[in-house]
Image: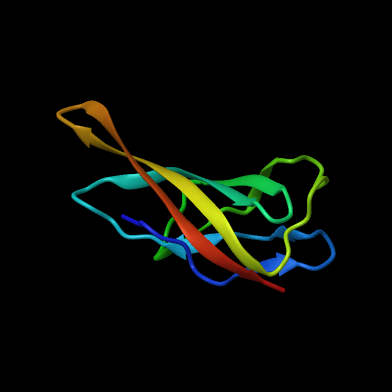
Length: 113
């Protein structure tokens, strides 16, 4: 399963937010992804955002549903380093029961326009 972000991530000039965070997606032992939630924070600007994607598929995830802030407001992201944190919720069926597994990671990402 994923443990990183694509970098650099692109800031949309019109909003000052990252539209949309992305990263690689793999599959492990029959688990399939249910949801990925992504937080980006930039200390130098005070910018923060949370986006998500339900039921990601293929070889990448793209957190393209906005959760916070809504509407985009507050601190704007600028080119440079930021902190990315993500959680991927996965599940599979084992003997008729749904089993969940969570992958969580944090890393520095580079932002650009």
